[in-house]
Amino acid sequence: MSSEPLPQFCSSGQRGFSSLISADPRRVFARKLEREIEVRFTPVACTVHTPEGVVHARPGDAIITGTAGEHWRVSRARFADKYRPVPPTVAGEAGRYVSLPNRIMAVPMTTAFEVLLADGVSRLNGCAGEWLVDYGDGSLGIVSPAIFATTYEIID
Image (cartoon, rainbow, N blue to C red):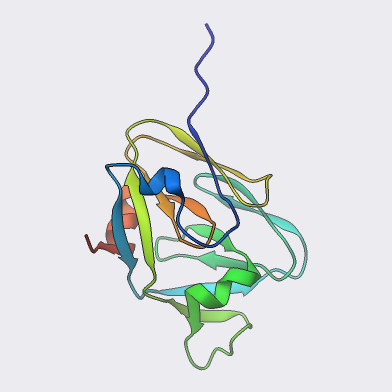
């Protein structure tokens, strides 16, 4: 018995929202709530084990620990647009940061799906009920319903 391939969404790496996600009638706009997180910057290439899959990190990328203990990677190039240091942390150094109230687009998914990250290698696996999130900077992600409820506010 062969299984159907999962719907796949690809991060473009280019600024702006995905037209595919924008056109989805279930999509909503939301704003990230200001939440403190713990950040370290990896000095070497490594992998980050997230609930959705293994993500490859390059030297200088931020490895974040969220409020529920979950980990994810943010590229060094995109980090300053998403987080600011909480004193006494100095920008670019390990420590506590707060998320900026950036606007995102999200779709509540009704089936399992896959996200290919902009590095072309890292793949995330989502389940029905999870959110497909478009950060508006060419990157996509998967967020569980529980974390979405405590991390975002729907604004439309």
